Image (tube, rainbow, N blue to C red; front, side, top):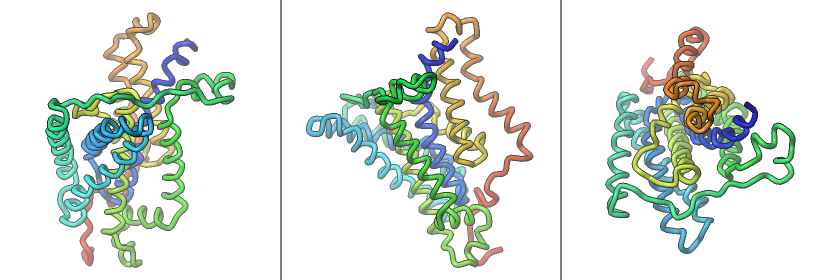
Length: 315
């Protein structure tokens, strides 16, 4: 059993990282009071931007093009999220409908542009991000083989962003204002906080992190843009709810989803797992999420103003 865990754990971590950073983006948006159903579309946009950038810059920059493409994906994701911010914050539109529109627009526009760029709806990376073993730490018994063998640079980047995001959310004045706008926006407005500005910034952060999530999928285990991220954005939303809108909660939820999904994918290659039907392993994380929502719904508290448009002067 141990050798199975050691073999699949690096792949589980690689699968969990895009979910984690996208869930963190959703956390910032919803903590400010804006529900962002459009995470899926923002991941697609980030993946497309990363693919175009990496392919275009590879002849001159080599392996460094991958890292530049991650930054470009974050910028494009933040810019594209302004559509959702404008509709939800400035126009007071229904946030669920706006997010759904983002998902539809992102898939259509990126596939069209990919066909313009390559002649087909696909963009194949010349070179993705290589795996590496962390010196010294990979030799630690038990922990070393699980966390420090065959790892990606994006894994440590995303964990660093998680730590930074947690600090900003709970230990800075901006984080306090953001959480106030998601809980009591009118009280925040009365205290002199620009609710609209905070929500705009939060949605842009959400777009940047979701774009990074889509790019991470591309440069690590996918290697090809095809106009889809296979529902990872919706899975990130489920992890956000499962994690009860807390950074450490979504860390645990995304690792659980990543491990469960990898276990399902590896079940046909491991004889000891073939006794369990593959469909059971694939639906297991979703069933657990539904059960968790049922049993812990009374203690699970979303931000009070999430999904509610803010109208200044109205109580």
